[in-house]
Length: 292
Image 1 (cartoon, rainbow, N blue to C red):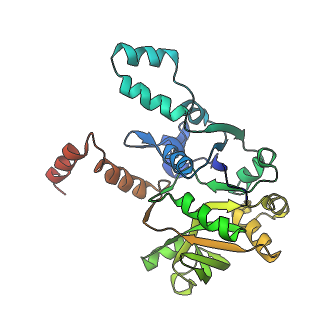
Image 2: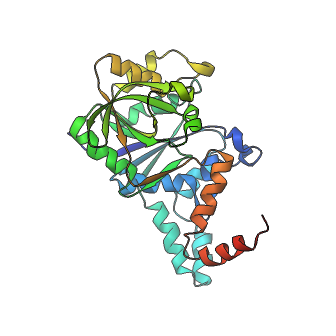
């Protein structure tokens, strides 16, 4: 089976939960200490073996392209003059993480539309999809764990995360599962945002996908769902009904960071600041002195 080398990262949303901050700044560029959210997503993909990163953008997203581009001559000269070669190494490293391809989203709103927008680039290849405003920090990387499972089972592979707090089950798509082997499960169906007492399990299936090229005709035939949007899960259900197996890979040694949510975003910043080598100790002292 051919290895997965391409990932689509949808990044065309409006970021309404972070307005007015996101009126002119992409939510994917919100910083986690000193790196934007989308860089963590790209780094996970690259560390999993991805070579081509396809970012689907929209209005006011130009800063994403600029971030992954080579640094300007002015910035290079400034860093060299200030003897900040270590910083120059960092920005050059960002530009050379992968081969970046940018596509503008067109068509109906919904998380299936950006996937369809990249069809001409992917052709007949299977590929990965990862959202640009959330990530999982795990060892080995989440996508690498999924690739290993997909290389054995094929079909559709979706990352799975256990939701330990029952009240939080209604935030996610929860899978009705059949155990296959180890941390791999066959998905019988996904219930979007169920009432906690009616959830078929506590495994949320979201965040990252490995999809076959069959997803494209399925997306073209999907009827608008909730909110009049084109939903990726509806297209996946079409594939499942046609006999293409859909699996969940429960991610081991990982923690999910939903940085598209204000409260979870702030928690993420604090957690990463407490492990950042340059600021962790003074930041910890600052927190201890707060009168909360």
